[in-house]
Amino acid sequence: MEKQKGLIFLALSAFSFAGCIIFGEFLAPHSNALLLFPAKAVKCFGFSFLVFGMLLILFGNNSCPRDSLTGLINGRIFMETEMKRRRSLLATESRFVIFFIDIDGLKKINDIHGHRAGDEAILAVVACIKKILRKNDIFIRYGGDEFVVATTFSKDSLDYDPCAFEFRIRESVRTHQLFFEDVRIPLSVSIGREVFEPRMDIDKAIKLADEKMYEEKKRKAA
Image 1 (cartoon, rainbow, N blue to C red):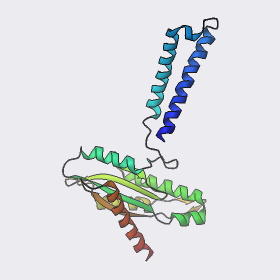
Image 2 (image 1 turned 30 degrees about the vertical axis):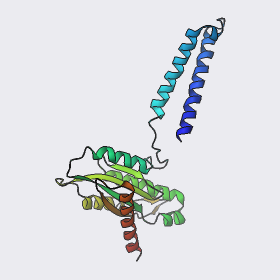
Image 3 (image 1 turned 45 degrees about the vertical axis):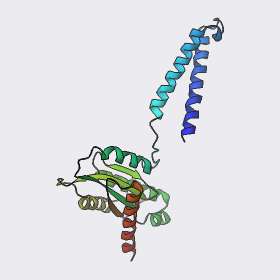
Image 4 (image 1 turned 60 degrees about the vertical axis):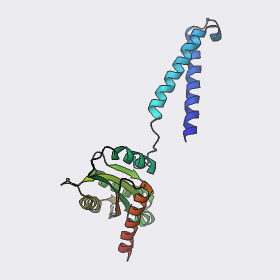
């Protein structure tokens, strides 16, 4: 991915340099060859690097790909980076909590109503979860029907605790009215949560939350 970005930037810079030459010759068609005038060449190089820098600012920071359907950040690396960055800012009594969320019955929705209905279900669940999230919460799409939320809780917090937070997500999804081609599609999610301890590996925390989520799925299927 990074190699492709480098090639794209290089190609665009070359095009900008060539465009500068063509533009200059268009304005002054009777001027001597560019190579005979180093000052012109320097200006063109400067222009091309300016364009390169602008492209780098516009696209270079987009290192975390976004999911094309939901617009969410798509990737564990982003979550790990953000959690490490924010953890240093947390009060000692605060902790990150990982919520691993899986949409119940998405395959069944796809099989019965088609993949467009499945996409609508995914978008509806994402919208329901976003209603519950706070400004600094981390929300990524982890897989096809799997999502991960990372948020912080403090011992002194009266409004936010993991159990209540999880309950609000469940209720937000459960009470949502999703209709597809005049057919109501009920929605629900299974959730596993794990406290992310200061020295815990992010993969381990997600794995533990994932395992707890599957335990709930097994109970629902029993």
